[in-house]
Length: 504
Image 1: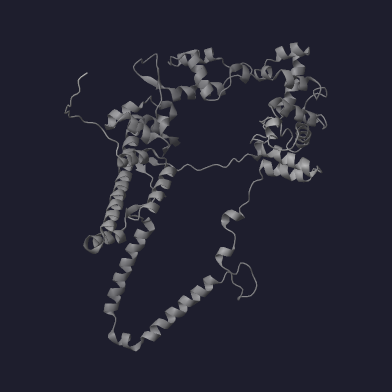
Image 2 (image 1 turned 45 degrees about the vertical axis):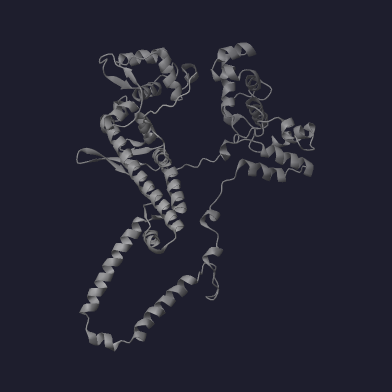
């Protein structure tokens, strides 16, 4: 093998740190972008946040100074001579002192006027807000009044601390007490005490045990309000169904259950009424269901007959180059050190690149959304039934960008339009062929909506099977297979026909 040296010319794309930063900003969500810009403001002294209120304040200050200068020029000299400097300063100083004294005295505590307090001594707004009781706090409160020994309470705290959000003990007792001096017999005894706490069924190790705990509790209480017959209690049909036939019950195979238990279908049906009132997730009432507001990235509105895309920059920092440090950079050129000048130059280039990246990000988002609006104009006009099939490649070719760029732009971005608040990924979906117009495809989202309406309007006693739904869609000029109907039905969280069937 011979060794030699060759010279070759080639071109290749190199991902510089600046380019990587621009791509990263492009795919960030609104909240992530806000956090990223805040981090840049903290790390780069050349960047400065200029709120819109500050711009308005600066403009108004300039106007007020101009008006004051004009008024002072028109005033008579004799008036200026009559008032001394001391007389002019006295009212302003007294007024300023009065306001400072007024705002300095916080009278929320009450008492004499001499009793003052700082604003910082009072609890913050977050500290005064009501906090929902968690499942752990609720159980620990009951444990404190349980009358158990200190050792048993220690085991109880260990059990409660290992419960999940649904109220289940998912780990084994041996694993739970590993590394402690507690025995498994002690843990089993305390577990039974914890399982007697409210909510009923808590600390169960599986669904069957959870339901059996609740059945035992119901056996001690009147059942008339449940509408179940007296025999459908603990130790009877209900318990047998929970222990051995939950899978059959899920599929509503009542005849199979009745045959296995040697009872009538009517008795099984009455027993299911008791099971329906049981709670499979005892910790559900204590789950934090706080809703988070989604702020749209763009607004799509109709103005003078045309759809317009408006970028929502409310709440985002308005970044600019700091005039102070820009002046320091100019002075560093004359009499500053080389290290200071190099540092400021580096920060200035980084700040300029961040500002340009944000501007490019905003332009790209508006360009992509405008292309989406052009393709889906009928959707904005008439609704989801007129949503067209769309892929990333179509938008990429329309605006002259790569598909990966379109994917980054539409990730974690939201649009507000007359049809509601929608994820940008919502507009990209597959198409199904039409019988009457083979070249015109129908959106899969539209087909899902048609399936949902069919299920909502069906007879509960005889729900539509997947084959029947496919046949009905075919009459509406939609070519679709049974397995595709099953797939769309599962994606919409619609149970099967057997599970949807109702017995009256």
